[in-house]
Image (cartoon, rainbow, N blue to C red; front, side, top):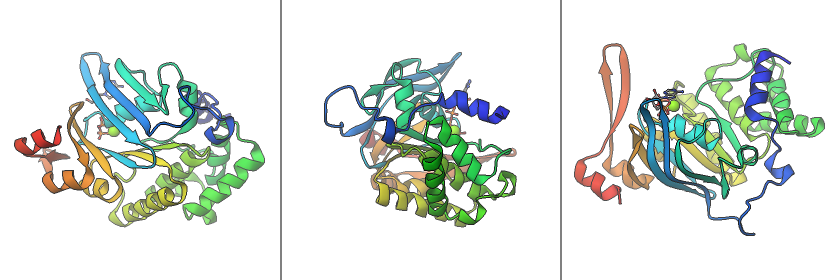
Length: 285
Ligand SMILES: Nc1ncnc2c1ncn2[C@@H]1O[C@H](COP(=O)(O)OP(=O)(O)OP(=O)(O)O)[C@@H](O)[C@H]1O
Ligand SMILES: [Mg+2]
């Protein structure tokens, strides 16, 4: 087992696949309308309030967005949902399960595409999928079939034997999406799925995500810097900055009132979402 495999193994802690192991919400027989419920969710690193008492819910079957600039707290929020970092305070439920006490079950229900590439460079494309499937205890034959199916879905069947460092940025991102879908998660968490990709590749990934939602009905939570991406993919979103929610609404409402500006300071280029104070008051309700 390579160093990378060991790390992934620790990260996913050999959880069982949701569709197979049957992790079920503990409360009630009918699944609740919300897949994620966050109340007063807070994460403090030292003296830094990365996420500051935020509330939101993600409804079953929707695509929900966290829209915000660098350092807003998007990845930290996603890491708490994926049980990769503990909450400082507040409440966070995934499929009615408390992430603090049911981490293992929650991880089995979620597919995560992190912001940075963490594919294993020592394994080829298909082995990246098959080895990852073993952390979810998916039998080998089934894992191979599922890997083939997903490579077909992302249009990479021809590249099954390719090395990871021979793939383009867009291919790596598509492969990470496929890997997150191996265990048929109920919730797909995508941390900036298209940042750093050129416009054409971004369009291709948008198309795949739309198709995925149409075909599988999976609930999607994604973070993005781009208003255009939020507008294209999300039904509802929250605008987040400095760890706080600035506005929440249907995407079309936010996009009508908000403006995205690019700020350059020295060699650093960032984007900010600007919403006028009266509109903010209206959108904060
Ligand atoms: N492990 C950590 N230790 C200390 N501070 C951290 C850690 N992770 C994140 N932070 C801080 O928390 C804040 C939120 O970071 P986070 O990565 O969640 O932002 P983000 O919205 O994902 O930004 P980006 O768009 O750049 O990815 C930042 O100020 C960041 O420096
Ligand atoms: Mg981030």
